[in-house]
Length: 87
Length: 267
Image (cartoon, rainbow over all chains, first blue to last red; front, side):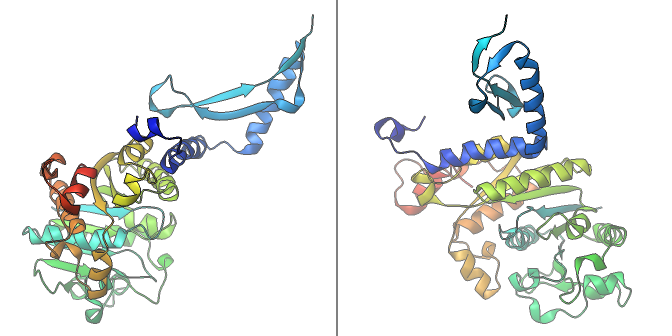
C-alpha cells in the first residue's frame, strides 16, 4: 500500500495499467475469442433458463483473475440476474 | 564451447540493439571473447550503435550464400580486440536466411567465442525464428509499458515452446520521475505478470541518445547510470552474483544519483 494513496484520492495510472495488463495477459494466454465466450454464454443461459426467468439485459460473462489461487489462473465469472425461479 | 544468448522482445523500439551492443562490449571489457550478431536483416543497426558502419564489407548473408568465409565477415571492434561484430545485409530480407543455415553459423561461432550474442529483430516471424534457433538462453527486453510487456509475454510463450526455457528479463527505460508519481508500471508488477526471473533494471538515461550519436556504447561512459546497469547485467550473465542492494545509496546520501539508486533499489 502506497502511503500517498491513503491521503489522496488520486488514482495512479500505474495501477490502471497493472489491472489492464493482468486481464490482457489472461485473454492472450487462454486464447479465448469473444465469439467463443459468446458461445459459452448462450449455453449457460440455456441451462439456467430451464430453472429460472433471467433478466437478459444485465447478463455478464467474462474472464478474470482469481485472487484465491496462485499463478494468475483465469476464472470464468458469470453474473446472471434472476427475475423468478420456475417451479 | 561458448554460450549463445538471444536478445529479444517481440515489440520494436524497446532497446534490443542497444542492449546487445552494451552487453557485448561490457563482457568483452572483462576479457572474454565475444561476437555480436545482427539478426535484423534489411533493417540492420547494430553496426551503427557499435560505430562500425564504415567497416562492413561482407555480411551474414554473404557467409550463408558462400561468397565469403565466416572469418572474413567478422569485424573487429574499435576498442576491444576480443570483440567482433557479424553484420547482416541491409538490402536483403529476413526470408533470405533459414534456420538451418543460421544454426550452423551460430554453432561455428560458439567454438571460437566465449559468448555469441544475437540481436533479434522485432516481430515473431522468420527473423525471430532465425535469431532464436541457435540460442542456449534468452534475454527479453521490456519497457515498463503495457504494450511491451504484453508482447514479451507472447515471446516467452514462443521461447518455451521451442525449448528455450532459460530466460531472464531486463526492464529498460525505468523513469525515475514517473515512478515517483505513480505513473509507471513497477518492476514487481512486471516480474509478477510475466512470471520470469529479473536480470537487471536499466534507468531511462538521456546519455544513451548521446552515446548512440557517437557510436560509442554507454557502458564505456563510467559516469552513466544506464551504463552501470548494463555492466551489472553483463556480470550477472557471466554468473557473478551482483546484488541489487549493493548499489543502494545510504539514507544520508543526497542528490539525484543517490535518489535514483534508492528508488530503483538498484540496477
